[in-house]
View: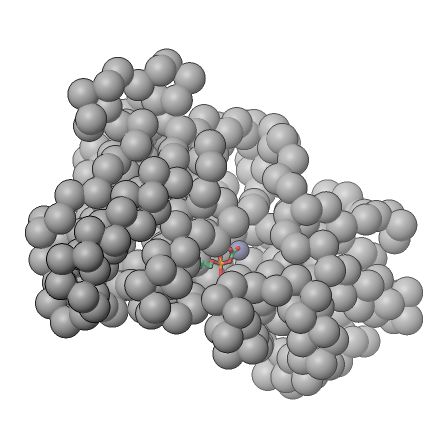
Length: 361
Ligand code: KG4
Ligand code: ZN
C-alpha cells in the first residue's frame, strides 16, 4: 500500500496529485500557464518559475482536498527533478523537499521522461506491467521536449533505440504555429486548423525515412529529424506570400494539414519499423503530442497486429503530477528513496532501466 503526493513543474504546468498504489489517482490538479507564455510564442523559463511559485500552493491544496487526504495520511512525496527547464524544475523540487522535511516523509525524485511512459498505465492499467506478455514494450515519447523511442524488456532493462537529432515533434508544431501566426501552443491549434484542410495538398519532407530517394544511414534508421520540415514550411510560406499575399483561408488549412501529416507520417513509420524490428508486444504512445487526434487514429493502423497499442488518456499525455505520484510507487515499494540534496537536471540522462517491472524480483 502506498499513498504518494506527486509534484510536477518541469515546464509550464504546475501540477500536484495524490496517487494510491501507483495506479488510483485520488486527486489531481493541473494549472496551466499557457496564457502567460502565449504572448512570447513559447515558454519563458524565468516566467515559468515565477508562475509556479504563485500556483504551487493552491494546486497542492486542491489536489489534497480532492483526494480527501492531509499530509499526515501520505507515505511519501515525489517530484520531477528532470529533465526540464532548470528554473521551473527548482520550484517544484524545493517545494517537495520542504514538504518531505516538514512532514518527515520519504522523498523520491522522478525522471519526467519515464513518468510520461508510466502515464499510460494509470487508472487501472498498472496490473498489465506485471504480466510477461506485455513485454517488450516500445514507448514513443513525443512532446515539446522529446521525440524518442524507448525499448523496455521483461527485466526492466531499457534502451533508447531512436531519438530526434534536432527538434522534437512538439517543438516543430509549436514553431510552425508561430510562423503561421496561429498562437501557442502549436499542437492543438495546428490540429484544429488542419481539420478543414487537405493533408495531401502540399508535400513536406519526411526526413530520415528515405522518402527523398536518399538512403538513410544505419545509425539514423530509427532516429527523427524535424528541422527540415520546419525550413520547408518557411519556404512554402514565402512562396505563397510572394504569389498571393496573405496566407489564410483554405491555403492556411491545407498548409496546416499537410505539415501535420508529414510529422504524423514520420512518427508512425518509425514507430512501426521499431515495433517490427524488436518484435514488441506493446507500444505506448505518450507525451503532449500524443493528444493529437490524427496520430491517435493513424498509429494503430501502422503497427503490426502483434503489438497492442496503449494510448495514454489525453489528460495524462500533457504534463501532470499523477504520472509522477504513480511512478514513485515502485521506488517506494523497494525502499529506494532519493537523498534530499539531489539536484535538478535539464537534459535526458541515459536510461538503462525502469522501476516498474517487478515480477522477476
Ligand atoms: O508533454 P508536454 O505537456 O510537455 C513537455 O514535456 O514538452 O507536451 C507539450 C507539447 C507541445 O509541443 C504541444 O504543442 C503539444 O505537446 N501538443 C500537441 C497537442 N496538444 C499538445 N501536439 C499535437 N496535437 C495536439 N492536440
Ligand atoms: Zn512533458
